[in-house]
Image 1 (tube, rainbow, N blue to C red):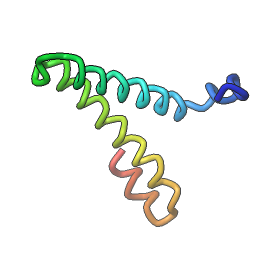
Image 2: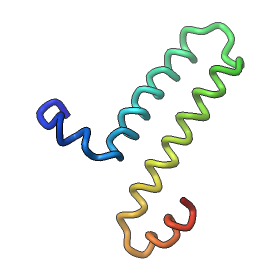
Image 3: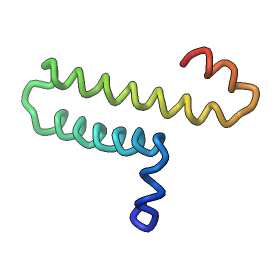
Length: 75
């Protein structure tokens, strides 16, 4: 990423990777250092992390030709 900063940010799927990593670290922070792990913010962060995981999984499933149609229908 550091060597190809301009080219890296041209692809919109890379923004999903950056978002997923950021939300993941924020989720770890919320779970480890906050007293109330069941508050609304923690649940929203976990939900956002799961949604980005789901989108990444759809991206990787598109690689296989037989699954492309299924992924397109789900999206």
